[in-house]
Each structure stands twice: as structure tokens, then as C-alpha cells.
Length: 596
Image 1: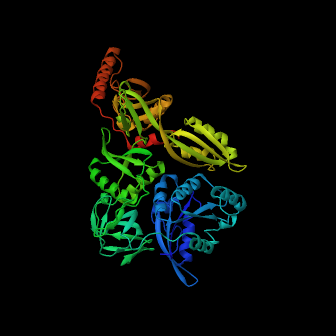
Image 2: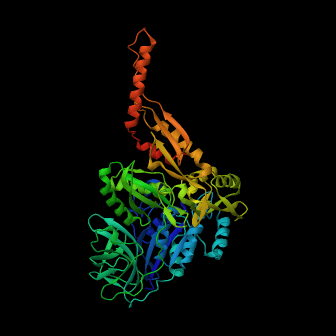
Image 3: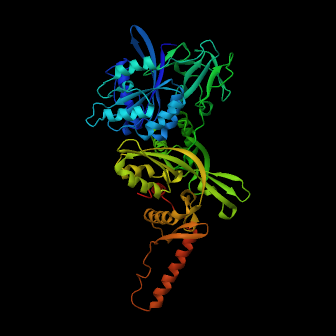
């Protein structure tokens, strides 16, 4: 055990985690120079295309120092705020963390929040100053920032470059010298934490685990404490570039287990594995259930594909434990699921993965957050879907979730960022100058204002220089109303939204205008209305396609023409009562980009 080191890599987006992981794999000889490629550990097409890490990736490396062999288990984690749940799970399986800071950009919001996650789990932090080869690197300034942030000695900070390989040996030395070996009792009953799982169409579900106490042998009868289910350990092994079967895995090590599980619900990330004949009395602690931030409906384009979509979502949930979903139905779109996501990027990635990995084309409704509605008796209802919001005459008050937002930016953009946040109903709580040119702004903001397009707008007003991180704080009472969209006097539930009363008129007007452009003309006139309760606040009309019925009248009396037009008018009126308006998918998608 004293020769095992478990560590993860944490950093803000695009500070070079995956590139540095590539260099570590190359230096330890885990991957040959012939096999190495950019982002070696990122195995999804999406990750390569976007240049981001979406999933945590575990891999085992061997390293020899002074004739002594060491086993290093590395977990490369995502940097984006939407995937912070992946980071928290990886941290629970490690004793140390490499905190990587870009020498040209300095400390950013996500660096700080990931650092706090690691410190909560009492991990040893090794600060690494990456991208030293860039012409814009500011090593001395950034070292000052790191010293202030984690109160370390200046000489503990390792200068490195993922591109050129500078400092990689020093990092490996630091991991062995500074990261403690795993603690645990090899003689105790087996206790292992599941920190990830993947679905394999041939082998079933593969669970990745970290052994806390005891050891596991091939062929053992194992039990998952949370679900209470028992299985045979058909195959166990360690995670190299490919899975490498072993006969046993001991305390402190990381491995995988295949036990022929076919049902996605039977494996829960954060569960504890133990032996049937010698069970442990306590489960591993330190895992909270994920709290989704953004809710949206996902519906199959063809209603017959509902069951197929359910299967696809189940398999996707295995690989992404932060996805939460339950069935719901909509009069406009049929049967589908109400899904909980950690943010807008997370939602976009899930939608793309459904299309790529499972060939499912889906319609996504307007994202919203969950509200607490209190009736006159003081009873609370949780509202995840705008259509469930009770009528105003039955409601005492509605509370919405607020977040504490941390924005780190250069001093030049403070004014425009403050204007943006105040527009989004933000309340400035604090403003701290980290250095003469870097400012940390702290706001309390309603989450509903952030989920839509706040991050994109923040990047625009700060020219990409602001970094953003948030955590939920509490629910606060607000004057919120349900805005219904009526097409041909029929409400379309998929377009409903819960919105602040002050912004309802502007939002309703924009949606009506957008839908007028996108819904094709019919043989009859189509009114598009935005309404709060029974009060219509905005209206647009799509003109009817008309046939020239008077073309055959040549000369003669005007009454004949009038008679024909009256007849046409009656026909149009009757048609409008029975007519059905087909809403194209682009109309549902357009609402997401309403403020562009």
C-alpha cells in the first residue's frame, strides 16, 4: 500500500489538464510515443471536437524511482462548472490533487471552487504553474496569486508545460514525496466506493471503484449496499489504456468490476461494494445526491420512440450520474421526460450524446428552474414544470432559487459586468481586488436569470476575460407569474414559462414575434398571444393564405363580389374553429435563443 498514490488533476477550463495528463502517461511509459495523441484520455468524439473534458477518466501508471516501483492512479477531471459533480466524485477517490493554473491567465473562478472541494476532502494540494512556454506567461505574478490562495511556499509551486514536457519529472517526484499513500485496513471486511460506471453493450454495466478497506478477488460474491443486490465478480481488473484483468485488487487501489448487470437502475454512483459472506457494517460517506439546477422537457420527435428514448436515457445516466429524469406528458408534444441538468452546457451535451450515441432525435423545451409555490394554508408545492404552477388566486407566494455568483475579471470590465448582473436582478454583495488589475465580484442572483444565456453574455461583455462560478444559497420570495403562449386560442404548454412580472411583457412580445416568423401560414388567420392568466399582454397575427374568389367576376354589380367574399369569410371562420396548427420544431428551439 505504501507504494500506491491516488491523485486527480483539477483546474479551470482550458488550463491544460488533459495535455499535462498526456505528458504524464508518456513519461511513465503507460502509452507509447506511437499511440499518444492529443487528449489521450478523452475518448468521446464530442470531447475532441470541443477540446473540453466532459467525463472524468481514471488510468493507472507505473513509475520507478531508485529501483522502487510505484503505482500511480490518475483521474483527469473536467473544468467546466456544469461538470463539477464529476470532480467531486473523483476527489472522493483520491488523497492528493494537482492544482493546475495557467501562467498566462492566472487564477480563475473554477480554480477556486475546485480547490475548496479538494480541501473539504482534506486532499494534499500540489500547485502546478502550467503553459510556461507561452510568450504571454506571467510566472511571478501568478505565483503570488497561488501563494495567497493556498498559503504554500513559493518553491513548492512547480513550473511546467504540457506542450513541451517541462517539469513533468518534478511533478511525478512531488506526487511520490507529498501525496500520502492510501489509508485503510487490508485485513478488514471489503469496503469499496463506486465513483463511476459505463455501459458496454456486450458485457453489461462496468463499475469503477476504489477499495477503501479489505480486498476483492475474482469470483467473490459481492453486495451493493445501497440497492441491496448481490452479484458474482465475473471479472475484476485495473484501468490501463485498456482494461487489464487481475485476480485480486487490494486496499487503496482503483479498479473495475464486471458482474453481468444489465439494468441501469442497479448501479448507483457513490454506492459501497462489500462481500456477501463478510459484509462491512458502514458504507463509505462523502457523497451527496446531485441537485439539478436547470429543468427541461426532452421529447422524441416521433411519439412511438418513447420507450427507446427511456432506454437511451437510462444508459446515458450510467455514464453521467448528474442526469436526473422522470416521465411527463405534454398536450403539444406527447410523452417525454422532464430532465434535470447542472447547467445549459450539460443540457446541450446530453442532447448531442443522445443524437450521436443512440441515434435519437429529440425536441427540448424551454429550460426552467424549480420553484416553491405556497398556497393560502402555507403548504408548499415544488414546481419543476411551469404548467404545474397553481393559479394566482390559490397562491400565497412563490419562491425562486437564488445563487451566490463569483465573477473574476480584469478591472477594465467591472462596469459592464455590474450592469449585466443588475439587469439580471443581481444584488452586489462584495468586490475585492485580488491584485491591482484582477477583481472578484460577488453577487446574489436568481438562478432563473443565469440558466439562459448569462454565461454567453458575460463572455461577450468581458471579451472572454471573466470567469464565472456559482453555488445555490436559498429560496427567496419574488413576484413571479406564469406566462402562457396561445396559438389559435389554444395554450401550448411546451412554450409556457415562469417569469418575473417586470420582464413578462418584453419576453411575451419577443416570443410572439419569433413564432410569427417561424410558423407557416395556413388557409386561415392564426392569432399568437402571450397571456398572464386571462389577460392577454401581447399579440401577433399570421395572415391567412387567400384565394382570389372574385377573379371570375368581370364588370357587373359590386353586390355579387361582396356575396362571394362574405361566403369565403364564413368558410375561413369555420376552418379556424376546426383547424389545427402544426408547430415546427424550430419554433421550440428558437425560444432558447430568444435574446440573441
